[in-house]
Image (cartoon, rainbow, N blue to C red; front, top):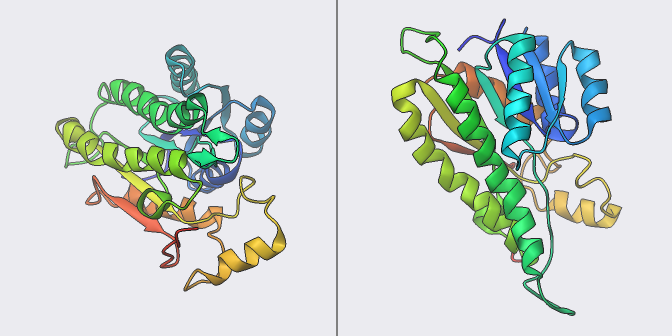
Length: 254
């Protein structure tokens, strides 16, 4: 799919991976709608890239439907959807104060997998009404964000790893179901990324983390995630895949 003049929806678009993706796609002529609970961050970025900001809770059906409608009114039907909204939710299953609260576990899953699924299903519902863009019959693409924690979840990452494992498990059956519609579904599983979510870690912790990454021995840049999003959009043969973006890192138990 060519990028120029397409319409895109990016959840979690006000910061981190979503913001980097929005900036890059806008450079290539994509009209971007930023869905985020942080209205100020989304509006500030939207103003700088000629996009539109949509205050949105990805776990709420009406909120997502409203954001999709606002995006379509501003830019036309979205052919590109990138699910970046998510939370970390670190904590041991059995901590010093007892077992993890069930509501804590459920919150992480609600945002990371139910929110991803909610956007995926409603975006696909709208996207199926579009005319095909290519001789292959492609109508659009949905890109989910997983994590290498889905494969090598560390101690204290049970909720997060479970939610991201579910994102990976969702991606292939969704791609197979949407194949008849010409809608591709892929996922990216980043290693540690240099975003606001991890910027608060102590310098010694960050240095040790970077030393565990074979090459390049540093955190993933958000712009590198964005570059992979761009390639997935343009390469029609990639479908139903989860691609690691981690410098060959394999996380230890803790």
